[in-house]
Image (cartoon, rainbow, N blue to C red; front, side, top):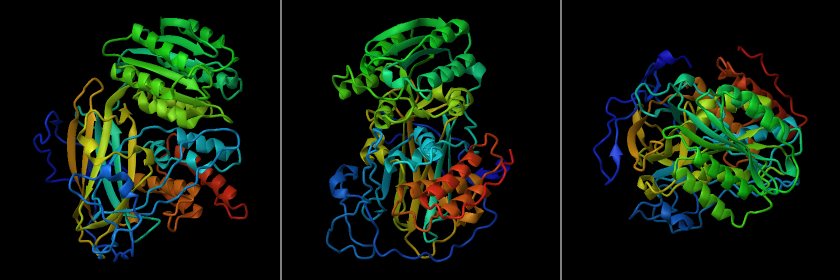
Length: 561
């Protein structure tokens, strides 16, 4: 989408005075915007659903605001008795190769009569997308629990403008038709992190923590780790420092903290590493944090970079104890980035959890191209945290919205009261990172008047060294835009979400099909300077063929890049 067509969304959006003790409220980012609408339009009548599926609210009563009683009555029949709420039962798949994934239960729609507010933590992890790519390129459909739609969405760069002011990120909202269910609306929330030029990047104190156990003896593991970290070393300057620690049966320091100007010494230390032995991951993590703390740079980027397949099998007395250590170190300003490698025994669930606890993000490196993306093209986002504990809360207007569901983010849901609780951990956003979330919305009325305010968007976030959060608030207005008139980013993100639902065989995929994904993504590809969207189309063709070998696969048009 060309950027000249962005105009301010709000003429009345304000950030009110402090309404909660101990919290600061700041002005909304000036760049909050949606694409301009050429003319107000009215939508075609929406079919009214007979019954909205909802999550098990009785089992999640903490999600309710005080005094708000859960109900499960069908719309228009609030006197109906309470009944069992329905969950989309996605079975947990056991990967025959021994890989470990966290079970994902896909929640259904929630009626606004039962709960009109939704709260979740952001997530900038991208591991799921590159892991799904690995499966597809090997000629396999991925296990359903390996498919996290939010990470597929956040893998891609979008055209949203970064903040025009000094704020950490800008917020963008667009609402249009839903391509897999024309009776519904789709809202896209986008955050774009402030970009930091290499010359303005703070000094880095990095500790490479490398798994050299026997399980890493594979071309796609330790050798790829070495290649990947060489790329990172080449990006750093003399003011930056790197230490190298390893673990197998025992943990040790291979290279003490060394100026990145001594690139030859650092790369030589990497080249000497060999795989063998069992895996004392806990001991390695403790040593890495100790090394980072001893060389901590005040005001700098202090970070442990863990490279492993996650197969910890020796020395872990308590997984909770290890997570507590990582959480404590994050509070002291030493963050964690997790890079997953390899196949066959990838412990995805464990790696995702460690990154969450360490105020970092989790990427899966399936090849040197992905290493270049994470450690060169997006280096500032990987190393520099610009905001932490970022939470999003959406309040829907009951008179206009009958029900809604957040697509993805299943393990990021928060109780509504935790939105204002600064002790509650949430996700971080790095310099230049994009965060995208989609809500599928069921309108209350058959015909909603154009330019209707249907939702309020609230954001909470802390500076990397702060204990108190700031609050920004916005109003989301539905101008009646049809899907075909939405921007490139909106339509491409919709195609990615459709692909994720098809891979998961979601009961909410509606009319989604692989041909529809191909068509939507092709028309929304844009300039695609990095070729990521073209590669997505190639993966869609692979997934379509694996899902139905007899299907006619559409050729991927040549990229315009």
